[in-house]
Amino acid sequence: MEGQIVTIDSLLQWATDQGVLLDGVRPSSIAGRGLGMVATRVIHEGDVVMAVPTPAIRSRHTLPKALMAKVPANMTLHGLLAADLLLHPPSSRVWGKLVPSLGDFESSTPFFWPETLQELLPPETKNLLRNQQRKFRQDWNHAKEGYPDMAKQDYLYSWFLVGTRSFYYEIQETLSYPWHDRLALLPVADMFNHSSAGCAVAFSTEAYDITADREYQEGEEVYTSYGTHSNDFLLAEYGFVLPDNPNDQLCLDSILFAKLQTEHKVALSERGLLGDFMLRADLTPSDRAWVAMRGLTGTVPQWDDWIDGEEDADGTLAKARAMLPGLLAELRGEIEVHRRRITELRDEANAAKMDVLLQRWNQIDDLARSLGRLATTTTRA
Image (tube, rainbow, N blue to C red; front, side, top):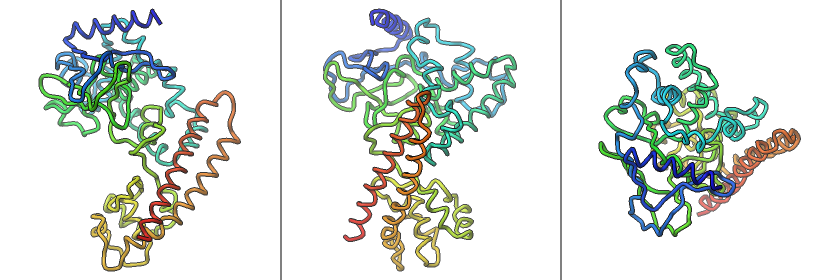
């Protein structure tokens, strides 16, 4: 513990030398969860607990010209930052001791799991994983084009450090990238852990500020929010799930794909509405899952009108609500099949990963039951 304190002190001195200001928070060991930010005093709502000046931020504007000249012009900012981090690691010699190791990622993140375990992931987590794999392949191909001697495993580790420790950063230099690729690395700020509700972040041309969202007592962990993400997203991208996530969603792909007529799938695809049939906890009627369910009511589809979530003369929204409990019952049957499969395949070598899989499927089952009750109540009302 004493050695870790010395290491943290060294990191904080390195950050201070770059102009980073911390007021009322400090990285500390959190039982069972590694490092996190802890309040060193009573923090009041609205207090700026951390300010990172622009010169200390790594983003598009800090990438070396030599790097940019070697790689394809269409390389993602995520991929560029990963290459830059690998080629030019932080000058602090202790930073690498305080971030997750490659072994940490291998144990917690589905990207690194055996394919047999990846196949046991819920559909939405699996979809996100496949997309993640595609992005890495693209970035790696671009990186090795410019740096043929770069080791793939080293780049992969750097790519995950950027993916799990970067912050959203919208400045003139990042506007040309898709919103999800407007990234920056901030010294020490990456020590904040995620919660569904956390400190507010704000950026300008001068600095990146982190501001308390509420009052925190001395010794209490202080969080930021990585965004309004479902547990499928958190598992695929960060290797964890929240026990109580108000932003969690339920994927109905397996149920709805089996029921939609071919011509309905074509029509939905033409509108960019095919697949990713997610239900939010408040049963938002404009979500694409509801558009698809309304196509199962036997009326002439009005896809473009249904996107707004309003009821129509045929009462298709009410009919979709009425059929939802039955669809969720089918989904729960599928969930039980997956839970049995995980239990049957469980072995000591992969016990921790199996526990995470089971935890996620249990969460999905709980959410299906909850939404089924809500749909029934709404239909009766």
